[in-house]
Length: 343
Ligand SMILES: *[C@@H]1O[C@H](CO)[C@@H](O)[C@H](O)[C@H]1NC(C)=O
Image 1: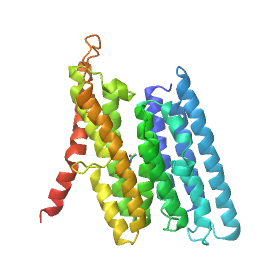
Image 2: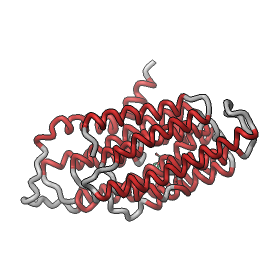
Image 3: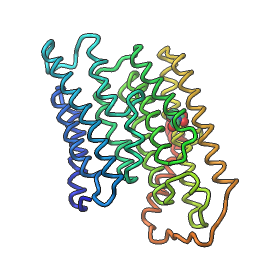
Image 4: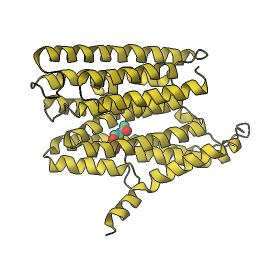
């Protein structure tokens, strides 16, 4: 386990690598940024005292190195036929270069490593893996992506796997993983439309993921059945956890509905109605089981064991930050619509 100062250093190089990759003007630079990013994340994940962390970091390392090596190979192949310092290319190159990036970001047919890795990580690293680690590959994909059969099938598979995969999961980490796979699909739709749309989606998605993760971490429940048995002090925690989960699922009065709304609107104006239909139906499946979980946790099984006296008194500051985040996730959409309607 790295010490605190090492962690800060690694976090800085992690974000730095992402920025190098996002702002580079050649594929070689982009690859280098991704590699710096990966090499700072691996030591953050591993923990000598925890076997699961070590296993997860090893899995993540192997998969990401496979992706990086493939990306480098494809880029070198491209320089043999085309120029290195351009992003322009022949019609098949985009799909070929996209594939390792899809593997890196965990989009559907290449998502198999994602649940296993997430299951072995601490919540902080889960949040990093779901947000910061996705930014660079998605940004690089925005140079390549256009709506064609390849992209649509990736999007369809991501949203379908995301919604069906989360069914009957009892682990909060698994639920968040499948939600992340699903949102990657939605972010790919946003990317095909415009980069700004993607940026808005990504910001809101990151905020909501952070909210859910901090609420879950505070409540200390890693599995659904643990949320049904909490004491009085944890009631607020439970409320925050499930309202922000519903917000992440895109239930209308909450902030999570805003990016979904904009993306659906963009899909319809861009003549992608069949894709929009399927994607909306999968989000309906998701909302069904999210509501089922939230409903049973709130209403049906509300036992209060006397022996479960884990107090949250010394977590005051974390409490407040989670409270602020969940207030944003609850009222964000109302505030946004009000602001956009004031002239
Ligand atoms: C996938 O994303 C959409 C749009 O935000 C959302 O409505 C749906 O509930 C999400 N599904 C999962 C599994 O998170």
